[in-house]
Length: 98
Image 1 (cartoon, rainbow, N blue to C red):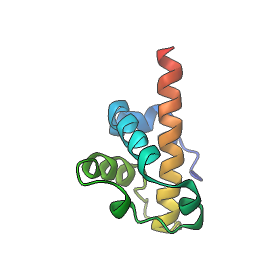
Image 2 (spheres, rainbow, N blue to C red):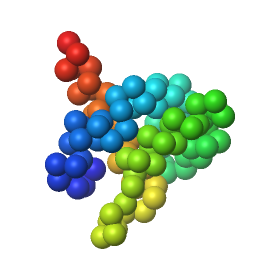
Image 3 (spheres, rainbow, N blue to C red):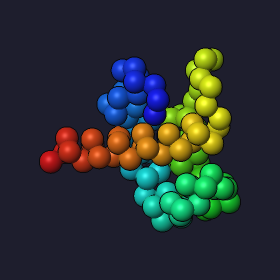
C-alpha cells in the first residue's frame, strides 16, 4: 500500500476488520483466485469467489480498499494493495500467536 500512515499498519488494519475475518478472506483468496490473473488486473472477484464465501471476502477487501478523498489509485489498484495488506495482517497475526 502506498500510504505509509499508521492506519495502514497490520495491527490497525486488523482492528478494522478482525483477524478471523482476515484469515477467512485470505483462505478464500488462496482457494479461488489465480495470482497470474491478479497480476494482469483481470480478476472478477465476485465471479471467482463462491456465494457462501463472498460476504466475508467482500467485507474484508472493500474495507481494506477504501479510498481517501485524495487517493489517486483505481479500484483495481486499491484491491491489489488490499490483498497485500491482507497477507501482511495474517502474517503479523501468526507471528504474534507464535
